[in-house]
Structures are given as C-alpha cells and as structure tokens.
Image 1 (tube, one colour):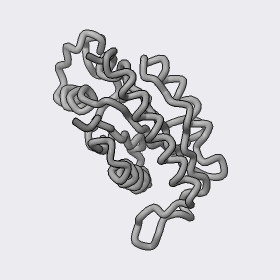
Image 2 (cartoon, one colour):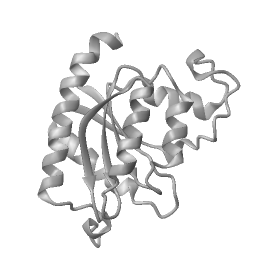
Image 3 (tube, rainbow, N blue to C red):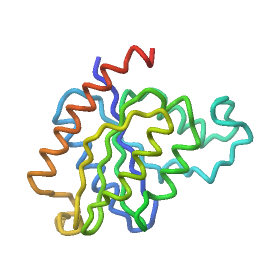
Length: 188
C-alpha cells in the first residue's frame, strides 16, 4: 500500500500562486510513484483563527471546519508544505492550521517547497521548519527553494521550473519516503 503524501498549499491570499506550485509538486510526487498524493489547500478549509473551545490535543472538536481538516491531516504519512515568503515568514494561514491540530501531525516527516523573489522563500522555509519540529513533525533537511518563481509560470498558468528545482524535488521526495517508512512504527 502506497504511503499517503499530503501537499499543503499554505497561502490563502487572493491572487496567490500557491495552487500552481502545489499542482507541480503533486505531479512530481505522482511521477515519483511511491506515494498516494493529495493536495490540502488551506483556502478550501476556511479555518478561522483558533476558534475551538478545547485544546486541540483533546481532539474534542466542535467546528465542522476543524473536523474536516483533522480528518484530512490524520491519515497522512508525510507532508510537503508549499509556502511563499511574506515579510521573511510563512503565511499566517499555515501557522494557524498547524496550531489548530496537535496529534494529527505527530511523528510524520515533512518537506518544504518555498517560493518567492530573490531568496526563493528560504527565510519562510527556515521559520516554518522550526515550527514543524515544535509540532513533533520531523522536518527533513532538504528544502526546495524557487527564486523569482513568477518567471517560471507559463502563459497557460503552469509552473515550469529549471532542472535543478526538479532534481531537488526528487531528492526531497526520496528523503520523505525514507523517513515516512522509518517513522511508520511510531505512528502505529
């Protein structure tokens, strides 16, 4: 049975390109052939700022949006967070989403694909990786940055990054596979 890889589209901002990047990552993961791939677009869950009356570790959710998000995250074996950089930080939407749950995230590896201007979102990726570790998610060391990403979007609205980005993504997926398999007994 294939491991379940959830690709988290972290931006909910109007005019975002996160879905374009997430679709490209999903296609790379599908071509890799070792994962069952699903995109979790945070915009579709409509998570408000921490509106549950109980601590998320209790998993006593009262809101339908939290219940749906919990179910979508819980069965994952690994994650790829696709994030832009907003003022040297990941979007508030992904920070909120991570903190809305606790147990559903634990003992699963995560990679980060970042995008932006000249830095390729690396500052946001580093901040996000620290939060992932504090959530008991195992961030792998490979980060795939996409600098000046707007130049890699075709007229058809698809992402066409350079060969090094594609190679980096393959390497990240290989490492995610190793860690998802290694951590499987801890998730059982």
